[in-house]
Each structure stands twice: as C-alpha cells, then as structure tokens.
Image (cartoon, rainbow, N blue to C red; front, side, top):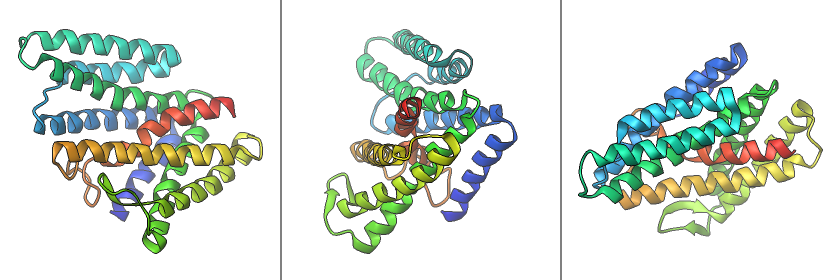
Amino acid sequence: AVGVGVGLGAVILVSLLVWRPAFLAVVLAAVLVGVVELSRALGAGGFRPPMTPLLIGSAAMLGLAWTRGATGLVVAFLVTVLAVLLWRLADGPDDYFPDAASGVLVALYVPFLAGFAVLLLVPDDGATRVVAFIATVVASDVGGYAVGVLAGKHQMAPSISPKKSWEGMAGSIGTCVVVASAILVPALGAPWWAGLVFGPAIAVTATIGDLGESLIKRDLGIKDMGALLPGHGGLMDRLDSLLPCAAVSWLLLAVL
C-alpha cells in the first residue's frame, strides 16, 4: 500500500514539474478509470449508467476546463447529463429513472469534480496550487489515521466507517493546518492565516468524501470499488477524498 501510494505521488509530481499538460493527461486517465469502476460498482446494485456518453463527456469536461475555464466545465457537464438521459432512452422505459440518475451521479461525482483539479492547474502558478491541494488532502489522511490509531476512542460514524473517530478528525485538522500553512504562505503569497482556513476546510471535506464513498459501498454491498491498486482497492478508493476537495481548493485558493 505504501509503495503504491509513493508511486502515485511520484507520477503526479513528475507530471507537474516537467510539463503541466502532462498532469492533465494523468487526471484524464484517472477519471476514465474512475468512471468505469464506479459504473461497474453501481452495476452490482442493479443500476446501469450509460458508459459511452460518460466516457466521452469526461474527456470533454476536462478538455474544456483546461481551454475554457469554469464555464467550459459547466457547459460540458450539462451536455453530458443531456447525453446520458438521451442515450438511455434507446434501452426502453424499464428502470429508466434509476439508470439515468446513476449516470448523472457518475458524471457529477467523478469528471465534474475532477475538472476543478484542472481549473487549479490553469493559472501560471497552477502546479503549486495543485501540490498544495493534494499535499493537504494527503496530510488529512495521514494525520487522521495516525491520531485515530493512537488515541481514537469516540467513533464518528460507526454505521458507515467504524474506524473513523473524532480524535482522528482532530488529527486531520491539525496536520492539514501545518501542511497548508507551509505551502500557501511562502509559495503562493497567501496571508499568514490562510492555513487556518484552508486546512480545516480540506480536512472536513476529505472526511465527508471518504464517508460518502463508504456509504455508497455499504449500500451496494461491496468492500472496494475495484482491485487496480494493490493495498488500496480501486482507483476510486483513492479519489474519494480528492474529488470533493478539488472543488473546495479551487474556490478557497481563488479567494485566498
């Protein structure tokens, strides 16, 4: 698990430092895999999200986010939703609503939220913004795990994720504040207090993202979204925290 995590981090850092558009390719590959994993997982619950318009729409969302900004991302998402609704019509009325709704969920959850990571990359200091976003999310996972293992006593959501504790949440927030402050202030010229805002926001969002995916998996009766990454499960099991945090990071960094 540690080796896979380090390998993924190395791929991200190299793509950012060598040539920024390379990171766009990394995000696109991750999104396409994530769409397939989530769609197949939903299939275990009897849902059939239309795969073809989702894959094409994913590429369109990320491409337009890079070339046209937030407006391009939103327009591509809306067109993808329309394509999902129309594509599913060909299979008739049986189970139309759950299949179409699951397709909209996939489009929103994976490529649309990932599009905000691309929006973070667009400015001249975009590579630094992406590093700040990812490093803070990683800090949330590491801090929450470490403190939770050492001092976790009060469960946060036992019916969804029994291992998560309020003590671990405190560890996530503290670690995020330290890491965010260490990057935002010297590298992006943010005010001294930026980490005190950005850190807790990312810690809370990452935890909600993790719990949200855990809730989906419990509802579907599966342990992991896939088996692509040894020690981690599927790629979606690593994207669950990053995806919602990308949107929050984009918004907060635009303000800070």
